[in-house]
Length: 116
Image (cartoon, rainbow, N blue to C red; front, side, top):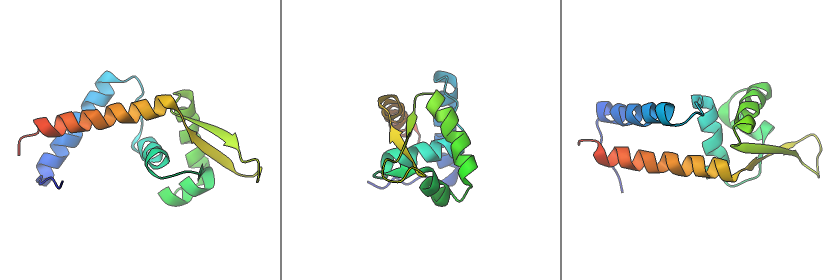
């Protein structure tokens, strides 16, 4: 169902969501890390460092650094591709799925509270 928001209302919603995320969750993800996480969870696998770098228009080392942090936070894991050892496959985790589910719930709640 489409939602009609003015740019100011949309930014207010984004502000409310990001503020609560920073205040309520110790995992303070960057925008790039969040984009990577959403790509991994919303687009069917497999996901590779090379593929994520191409999708986001950044270098593989940029993706690797982001994944290092996200791995430490338990949001993703990495394994070598058994068919092609040069590739690193990015895997989802239960904790990562729960993080995004809570984020989705927060967006819905804040969206419902947003005055139109």
